[in-house]
Image (cartoon, rainbow over all chains, first blue to last red; front, side, top):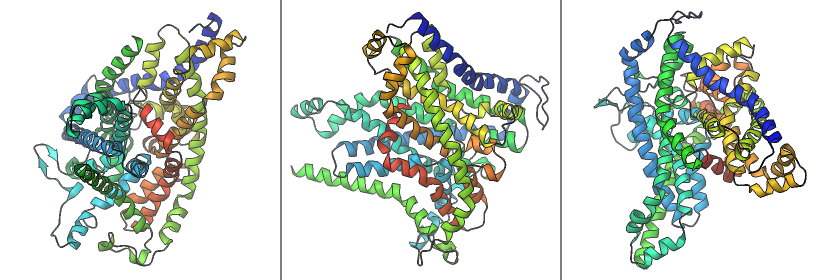
Length: 297
Length: 274
């Protein structure tokens, strides 16, 4: 677009203070955190003595952080898989022109408008070993004494207690993938489906050969967004379960919060936060890079 | 034809089953918030309330009303400033070409993905240094700043679709760039303003991390923190807790139900490409 030089200069002048403030709050603070993570500041008063990678070494040798990483890994895998598969099924149901479609859509999406704290309070009661699902099962005559999120049982490194959190988080976020897929499905030209039907393709054939390839890029975006949600997870675990016995429901976000703001171990907290940032950057940076390169072309 | 109607029956069955799955936590919360204290007994969470009463709601509301007010005092200025700054930044990145504009914008967008834990310690120190720590105004500033990436992105995606000719025509008529922005662009931005408003309203209302770190005094805490404190006490007054959860959720639920279209638009633009 043509734009006089004078106006470009003005635009940049407006932009500079806003971006300066934003970049200070993002990149300035990240560098500051990084600096803190290399110090000995593990009390209330700042102590900027350089200790190199000591905090990181301590972190990786700690049982809690290892458990956190494992929890994050399993939580992320299941959370993404359930949201993608469930979200696709729901969107496909809505796509096949059911009556009352907008009613269904409203119901599937409403949890997304809630706070993780609200979700956590709700589902904590539902999975509470004394009064939740267990008592429902007992009312139905079963002998139910599952520990749910208090269980310390683990299968191949997967802490069973996470199931409750995975269900709660998926309940909240499945509508998100549904909405994304639905927008994609709505974008498929009707002729494409019709011509496939004329060629004699059945419903499953159409899903496999026409619909899935078209929505593949959406699946990818959804995985990125859900992935970064789960890598950062904090509120839900804090409100619903806390760190749990033997850290079965602990996550780096929770560990960082408790270490820093409850235990005053600022340098260790900073080290955890930098590890969280690296994990998220690993997912997000390639994604942003590919998006903006595409736009430039 | 027959297989088709069978197919429909299966689909309706699944759709309705899914509705039940999505709604049953809502049943639990409504049902139990309506139980009087005398009825709150361990085995009865699943049974419908015998003598519905607003006892739980009254108590929850008396405990949370101040925090609800705080949340509104927090959310309203954040929304207004997000719209103001977001539209300016979004417009410049959408329509003005300058060196490194793409790299700069990518750096802005990265800000909406970072785990906020990685800036919390410096944030607390800085807020302390400018005497905003522990005040609602500190929380407001924090949310405005970290809301800039998403609000700029939403406006930029919208402005990118405005044809350049429209802006060039305005310039032919003698308007400067900001004149074009105020006279031509702003009047047609209403839909995106609503999207940003709703998005920021929901995410700031629902935020917990910034609120719990930056506000210590109960009298200024937003509702999410107060709800967590209320629910964190292990006494089994779950009628109050459930009523509290419902009260905390109502404003965003309201927005969602009445302005759902814009909510979904905001949701979809959160994945960068829009």
